[in-house]
Length: 413
Image: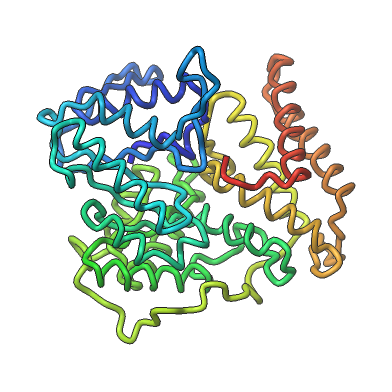
């Protein structure tokens, strides 16, 4: 999956480079030069299917017409720009897109019409373009079968977009103190609100003859830290084994060292003909997460530290950053901002404790103080001789991050 969405900082030069990379990847001509190893590499021939993930329907693209202020759908721009420039005869498989951020089955009709229009303009069969789609918003979880039906001539599978789904779930329950989640990295992979959706996704996908794909494990292996590497691969194996036991057909990986461990958890080539016995077609998809994980001041600090560093990455043109062993992108940044908002909104109803077990009410003033402290720590830990502009960029990232929380900016933009 080549991503023009959450792992790409939404900046015009990045988009243009991303589209160019996608086109070269599709025709097999993309190369990369690793300056550290003085090594150039290209794409080896394989049976791998390449999907392009365009930006979602919640985003627009400005500045396309010099004499107008009109906005265009970012989804339309990305998909049409790719489709216009491909030469189908040079591709090893039909053009395929990975649809993000959908919130209703009606959006599938928009994508269906777009795929048909692009195929018609290229002189191709109406069902030429194929797709997979992410279930990563809470409303869509209730309309997945209708979504599949509307894209039935194109869709190959559904993927549980775990981190954006968690953010969406928090967002829709933001005013409910029963939904104040614990520190993110203490939430088990098989927590009920994920597990029930996994099983529902499998039932719908396999009933309709398409693939059900699991989420990404954010803790990454390390080639320099043996302890972290062992822990990351153990967590990965447990996570993917659980998905395979739910009868999913495969899952995401984001690091090449994850591939073998992940693949080994799933029966080959898939489980598309398997169904869960007596599956509940209408499960409760909003089970209150009681007795799960811990809420700690250290977790609050970790969230603040992550959003500052993530936003600094965005300001430097990076849409995803490896932080403390975890791959953080827009979805996980959104989770952390929502968690911080929850802890302030419901500070009188829930407890967040420090090491001694004492409750620390999360007032807006406390959050501001913690932002200041974590920024100071980040700046103190910068390499010796780092230019002043680096600290200035982190300071701006800190200001933007807290301001987004104060203004309740939680949509995935």
